[in-house]
Image (cartoon, rainbow, N blue to C red; front, side, top):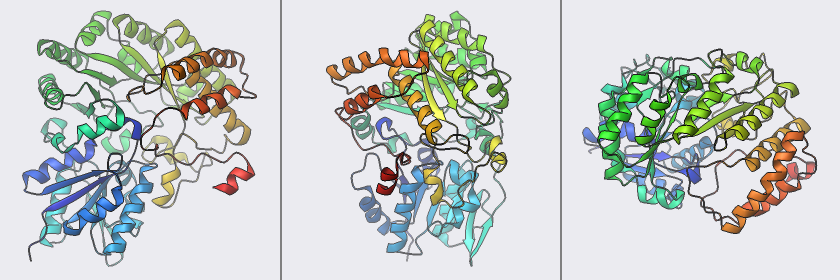
Amino acid sequence: MARSRKIVFFFPSFASTEATAPLGILAVSTPLERAGYQICLIDSTITPDFQKRVLEEVKDALCLAVSLVTGPMIRETVAIARAVKEWKPDFPIVLGGWHPSLLPQQTLEAACVDYVVRGQGEDAMLELVQHLSSGSAPDLIAGIGFKRDGRIIFTPERPLRPLVEMPPKAYHLADFDAYERSCGRRWAMYTSSLACPFNCAYCTNGGVYGRKWNALPPEQFVEETVDLSRRYELEMIWVVDDNFLVDLDRARGIAEGLVRENSHYTWSIQATTNLVARLSLEDMRLLRRAGLRQVCQGVDSGSPAILKAMNKDFQDFESIYESAARCLEAGIRPSFNIIFAFPGEGAKERRETVEFMLDVCRKFPGAEFWTNIFTPYPGSPIFKRTAEIGIEPPTTLEGWADFFPRYTELPWLKGEDHKRLQDTREYLRLAFNRIPIAADTRPPIIRLAQKAISLPARWRLDHDAYRFPVDIWLNNKLKKRIPKGKPAVDAKRLARTPAEAAAC
């Protein structure tokens, strides 16, 4: 009896309000399609009753494959995998993406997982599917892990291939109409380079790519993104490179090419502030003419001591201010990320960070900050120090579902201190406008009310006064009146009272 040529891919929710096509799945799908396999992509964000749909589609499929990163995506992954195993215990389930690549042993220890694909999956996934089709032994497939007779077996690592050698991603599999209905905007992600030459202590990039930066040439970037935007009528492309500006001549070449092609999409990039500060105002204006509208930069802390602890000696505050000023003068939004509660951060360092953020936002209206609470992710340099800093990482795949920065308590961040930091972050959100990818669905009256709340929020931040947060309570009431799609997939909020804890 001939084996099925159908592969079911499941993508669990990550950011439901800003959903778009999953790049990892689109990347591994192209070699499979070229080899004659049929791809069925089910994204839980845009698929009603997605578990029922998966169970229907796998009935005539060869395997189920899931792409995921560390965090709440694991919850839906485990639920789906268990449901499939209840239907048919020997049905093959393959996990790939960042989390299985960084913790392959622990991932394979889960009873509902049969195979993991580590690192770049384009070649490994194709060879694994061909193994499943033929029933041959998988021992010679580099870059995977599997189970045999109760034992977990890993094959040798597969060497990384330069990005220019990789096949184009299968964007035609994406339902951009459905993503637009969910998000309110028509956009996609695109990768033009891999890795980053820097070694920030919290970053997982080195765990997968080994800091070996490589990139597409400007001509390929221009040709592919212009075609992508016109073919699928995209208004925006998020270039998800870890550090887009490593090669400034390449960045200039891309901008010049987009201007020549009269491209009509806008785009955003990520880069370190020291590289952004190297761009002249003329460079910035060229990028603006080419459609660049946002540069996201990892400032991470306003404390020199904490930046040093993060291995960010390459960054200084002068370059941050230069970056903000130059971006805004060229009409590009500077967007900065902050990580609170990094090991060693105390009240003094945290206050330095808040004051720095207030100073930047007041000197450069239009700059925005996004804040997180530190989480030691697998693959990051600091993850090796978890025992030293008093953190016990989860010991199972399922345990990682709640290991998420937004509500994470830490040994040095608990109780009232944790609540105070969360209130600080909320007031920072209230005080200064941030522009998300998703369309703004707020009614005018709510926009006006939230703008009014920003004034007392700034006063609280200036005076470090967060008691009786009635304005946060009011803002939460207002947010309930904003139309929403599928609820965001997050870790559970940490209970603040015994009654709340009992209700969980």
